[in-house]
Image (cartoon, rainbow, N blue to C red; front, side, top):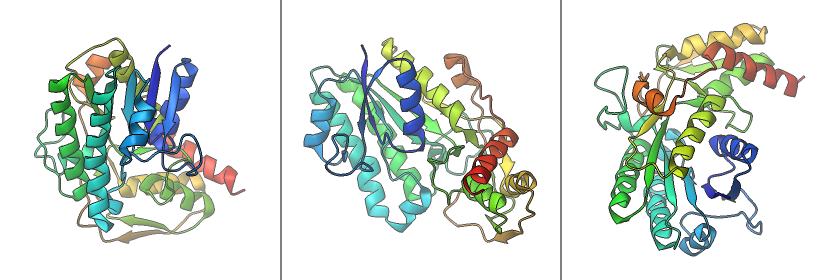
Length: 300
């Protein structure tokens, strides 16, 4: 029986990955600050003693815990750096101290590419972060790769604008659009022409699972994976899609883009797809329709 620790288990991606692992009867140890402090699964990655205890009997670690949003990093850069970089060092150290030497999958972000010099970005695109969140992810990635030299089997997955669940923060782009459209409220768009590669949570969970299975098979020296659809969608297009499905004709309001946001991104995942046999199945139209209807039912 494989036993896997998941830091950040109660987040958007954590809940989806936990669900898939449970379907495969894989033993899961959840570790997250969202649990009450008295809960057995409560855990802070900066608490090394607690972390080492949680990792002790695990065969693998999925490290998702982080200050997970660019805007949060801008508001508290010290916490972002401490959590995302120093917290990752804590996870690596704890894994090294475990007699089982568990494999370690690190959840990174397309923010490491920042403003890519060329689009679509590939897994080999250079680091070019434009905000503290992206910088913290870059340094954590470097630490994850260094850990291979001390005997850990590690892998990196880079996520791109994941959406599609009520477990998400409702003020993030796609959930905010879908909720506003479902309720008939104004839809605020921070930059009509900003474009992103939105990936549905179901596709992200499947791609992550495929990487986990490679690590369970003791595959080593894996290249960084990024899970992208290869299609760019403007924020205005996304807002209009949600508005059409919501059928309440919400007013779409353009606001100035934020100076710490990457203006345009989409990725070429050919290498990832060839290695994993993974293909995204939920397009942006279907994904927005599903989420908007979930909000409609919730607020009916």
